[in-house]
Image 1 (cartoon, rainbow, N blue to C red):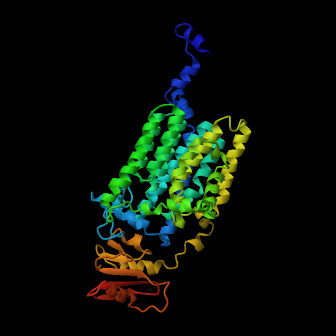
Image 2: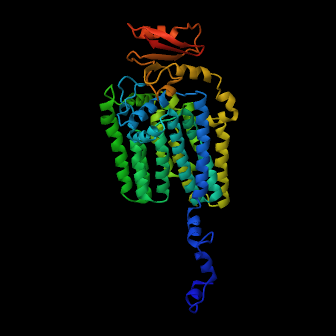
Image 3: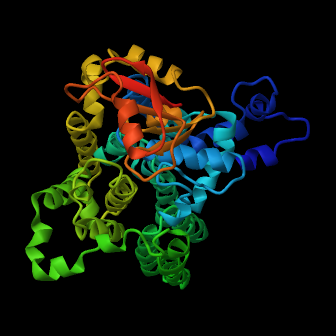
Length: 482
């Protein structure tokens, strides 16, 4: 029955369709059906995000429960979260006695870790937080892809992104400040592609408070926005990004760093580039660039959004530190939302692929590429969890940790550092530290170790002190200052 016939019906006539839809007990009244249709892309997107969160957290738990710590960074950021949880400046003793971490990188947005850590005081909490932030970006990107490409292609894009090698490597590397940058980039670029300029501006503007180099990414993002929107807001965003980069690197970081300079300025070796331009063709650099393109089946090359990766690749490739060049660690995580949003942009524009079938095949190809690559990166370890996450030394680790009473100062190496920071004031053994109350070291890789090695080495580092061994086995030794 049409609307005209209903409105023109004699008084007292009841439209049966209207009755069914207005009946309180009816399962799907019209407004709820419309709401379902409006939000339907979000349902598979949330499911993908939840699945990604479970996968990431399973990986993190296997790492954590097998004492597989990648570096000292988790311990560092846990000390930061611990201080923020108690409304204190982030004085991180792992970096050095009295070291303010705001002088290392500019990441004031990490203050958000404080309330979460206050409720769940564990280094593992930071891994869960990072996994949740990555999963949020999966929801945002998948929702965008489903809305603009359709359900099946969108889900394929979401799967490809969730399994992308950049995110996998970041999960494997454990917590870093870029955890906050990944969803912010996803939110900003998603809003940009939907021409929601104000939202895109706000989400992008927050990136400068995650890490100082992201100000340059915001610069390029702003220029891309200005080009697409034909409005000056994008130019102001570019000014905001470069302004905060200069302010943080030239003023804020030097004022808080013990060396009174930006700690990472020496890593940008422009002279080496001019003297040897072919250094950019290093095999690791080429492989990283190729894999950035390959993870989207080359589609990212058809969108100007891909230009946003240039600042991050630039500072990495200009550095002499080789571990910046490859695909491991967390450095490529911020590039994943960029290249995948670029791929969505390319697929959504009919000028790139003018066939629905080709768009579907391209999206399926992206998912298959991500699945194929995942076995070569961190998530491939899940294929043999028993081998890659062994628990054979868990008893020794637990016994060593139990030998250190709560609330004391401890000097240690990386092995159990992240398991000590929650209840102790921890120093890294490689720095010049005040004499700690306890020393805990991993001796498993040494040969000819005496039962009092930890005590003797501590006494040599801190002349005039005396340490006694309180725990020793084939893997760990703990010494106490007498």
